Image (tube, rainbow, N blue to C red):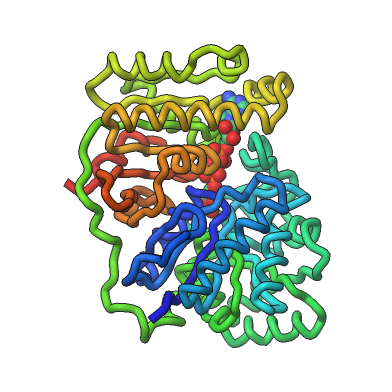
Length: 421
Ligand SMILES: Nc1ncnc2c1ncn2[C@@H]1O[C@H](COP(=O)(O)OP(=O)(O)O)[C@@H](O)[C@H]1O
Ligand SMILES: O=C(O)[C@@H](O)C(=O)COP(=O)(O)O
């Protein structure tokens, strides 16, 4: 039997977020790093391919997503899930629109949904506007994101700026009407030439209704929340009582690498610094050609007890200064490369349990580590499970890839307690 759901995630934290939700929804799930080259491991109902395609040029995002699609279809995927951020992180040029257009064309499909809602983390959609907690997206911390500052909250407008196809709305009153009302609305929108239906959603019950209405759609595009609603569509074919994989036991030193400048991460870094040694990576030092990696390693080697924190996390004003001096992409790239090199050397020096904060940062770290696949374990906070590398012949490494805005303030302190003994 082939897999049921094949997923393409546009960043690595987003991929583990979705994989954790699929596990909750009853799917036996594995995450691969990039499109798998060989056959997929057997015994899984869902596969999440993690790409680093959120902020790269749109053509590259399309190319990588289509390669992932091909691998997923070869594995028999019956439904394809394009996962983007619950804060719709993107630029006017993409990459959500161009990737969704290309996936629809490749699947010969003419209609899909746009639903970044994730109520457990405060992401709700009403009248097509995305809210983060109590405020519209453009008034949230996402205004100041280093790579994808979000300055509008209308998903219809945001999506329409990224595609030539027509974008419409399934309003909350319809969503509350349940799956049949939603399907009727899909049919009316399609008849009106709409390709993308932004869907309102305030609660997990709304996502359950939307999930049921999406039964049979070749493609869904969403944050991770919609996955909760898809389980029942495959009810008869999922093993009873599937739960998070048992992760292999891991050991070794503990470290946190943080390249996220999001509001939640900034508070988590501040909290960890009160209790544990912390090494700050400065963009200006990297730009001057200093041996930041060497210094960080020597520093960590002298602190063999307890977890250590290495971070580039900075306040919006500091990020703006670095970007003014070096350019946003160059500053981000320098930091990612440096943090990835530090992570690789720390693992080589015996770190066996690693938390990485930030989606782009996680992508850089995981790719540098040469990881090819991850098993999904227990949830630490909504949207962030522990995972473990399952690369043949290598000692498993425990990895938690934390989305910038997820997790409680004490995340970096408490996460270790959720690891299997
Ligand atoms: N001090 C800094 N100045 C400029 N850019 C930074 C700084 N620290 C981190 N960055 C960059 O900001 C980006 C943060 O993105 P990401 O890792 O996806 O975090 P998040 O999950 O919070 O979005 C990365 O490209 C990172 O390298
Ligand atoms: O959907 C979400 O919010 C996350 O899964 C996600 O994609 C977060 O991205 P980063 O904030 O860049 O980690």
